[in-house]
Image (tube, rainbow, N blue to C red):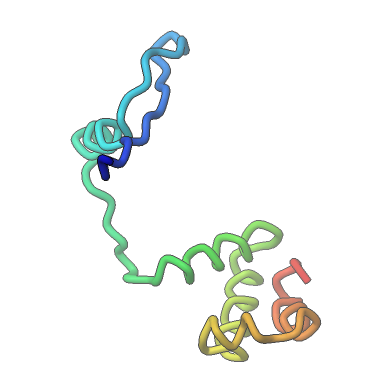
Length: 100
């Protein structure tokens, strides 16, 4: 039995919006990097930290979302501690961001 993993394929639209044949994901990434360069994580943030910041920013201003993120990281320095916390504790911690 082969251990070949199928390549992920994504259908792409042409300039008129018509869907064309599916292209391997690596092909699309390669073309995007050629056109726009390779993305750089300039602030060296952890990917999970960036995701949490994005979620907190969806319901409020930058000032309030940063306040909520800072409160969250102060109260729960690790995500393991955050995952063990009661929902009410997390809600109270991020209340300043508007998502509680």
